[in-house]
Image (cartoon, rainbow, N blue to C red; front, top):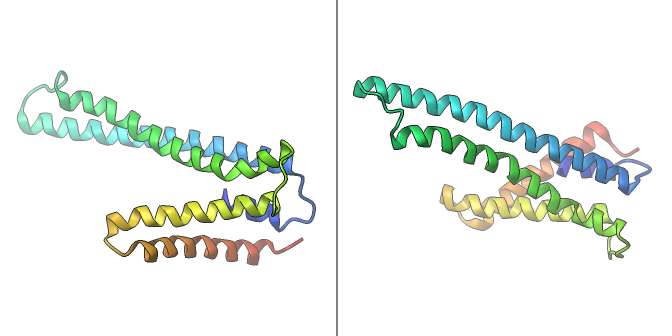
Length: 161
């Protein structure tokens, strides 16, 4: 969503309803792709692990908690993998919808959306700091730097029109 918003910002004539439609379409496509690809790959991996465990134990585990996990876990992983980017995309699009509803902004709605995207990137970095063990501010700035690097690449390849 960050790249789409930035691409629209670099365009000469921006029609906010078009931005909303494009962003919503991309968010839905990302969600469907995330759910389906995660489900297919996670299910195959869980089935393989279950089959290897059955071979090692020389028994049928089709009625075990391992078998139930092999069917339940891929669904959960797929939903998280698809719904997380959809929810984040919707959060980024809030200023666009509010603008269309007639709410006035101090800044342009695209700038507001871009700021929300940056805040979410920073927040992701802060959350990842717990896993990586590095200071939260450094991890947040690192993910934000990745966002700015993306912005720079978009600017270099697309440029203002």
